[in-house]
Image (cartoon, rainbow, N blue to C red; front, side, top):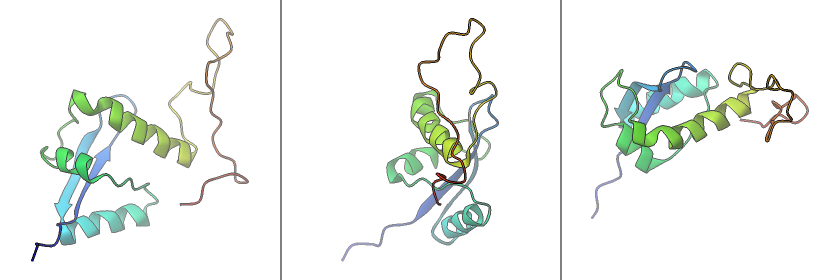
Amino acid sequence: MSKPTERQAIALKYDGENAPNLTAKGNDALAEEILQIARENDVPIYENADLVRLLARLELGDAIPESLYHTVAEIIAFAWYLKGKAPKGFYTRNQQNDPPLLLLQPPTDKNKVKD
């Protein structure tokens, strides 16, 4: 008989300027507590067991490794989009008034994705 898979969860904090930092990690009951706190605070939850295993190797407070910047940036960008957030200046045109290549509008109440 195989051992049941251990549930893991991690939490990252991103301030919009520095690399995201690991702010919480845990297995089983602690993982469930981390997830519950996220749900209570409307924090988007992204499930990826391989990524969690990699990030769980970090110590609390550590920045994510540079090799994971792109992967984590895509997840954070999507989470921000779902919340209608964007980095400062994202929705403004550049100084030469060139049209942007891609300009996503934050969701409005009519088309907001439900959590």
